[in-house]
Image (cartoon, rainbow, N blue to C red; front, side, top):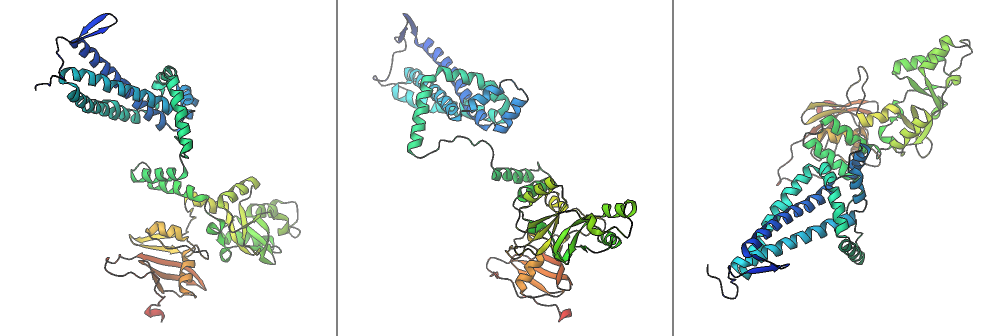
Length: 466
């Protein structure tokens, strides 16, 4: 290709005087190429430093310091001022990339002329920087964040000293501009947020890092502090209690028949619970106590208990019960009426799942892929999880039995059905006025062109019950 007279430079006539020494064009080309290679390495260093430093979580860095890993303390000192650290990396990286582009332009212009040399240098250096100065080093830094952060900490600190005037200047200018535009200038958050941790849990389960049981337990832990006592308590109708004036033998028999080690003791009615008694104390004092059998009274063995509102958070109650060394609390409403009771076991089950005793049935029994049999007191949230549905929760109810009563607006009988949002609910077992069991079946979704009712269909009795 012929070069225009204005752009062409005679190769043999080109000489570069430097410190009294003349370099011909071939030497300039060699030195320039070596300089570009060094600058690419420096570009890779700065690019990988940015990834390694800002991808290293603070909690992991603190663990490295506790493990006394060499260089971890220097890494922490750099990260203590993330804004200054970022300016150091960006100033160094931009100086390197601009110098690399200038040298490449000068060398290529010697051979191809000014305009063509500029174009070749632009595209050539861009390709080199993207590949060897950005993509490859950043990929390496992502895979070796901790070790690479330690290794580059000393060179970064040295860079900060060498470029100190420029770093101070651009650090100041950046902060002032951020202030003008109303930005906080925050570069990294100190720790991951609650939502980010939950997203990690979901992602870990999808990728197979977490087992299904581990995923469920971690999910329950995050849900725990949003759970109120009303959602986990044993309702008043299911409470087993003894009157304060009952004989010791009757209290022991009540414990044995109910299968509970502790039972509440009330005076007059359940709205006046005095405390709880433990079967261990009943048997010990009856058989080995100093008092005679006719002198021993149940009131002497009552232990105090907590009375808590139904809206109290479960995590707060658990802490309070641990501090007071109590295993049971009585739940009351706004009028002081007893609503139910909650035990330490009830709250622990919210984290680890249902703890079943011998002969006790599963609260949610899977009948088929699209059908489950649930107890009436099971929370709607647990039913939604089991069947992958979205039944709503209301202020007046949290259980599947409460949902059925709310939709019906009356007492229901065995065999009656309700259909809501693609779910058929059949009342299986009713005792007096209580729904003990219900069968839920997830129906096939209608085609897009078929209208789907928004509200529940009215309850209808089967032919056998009409």
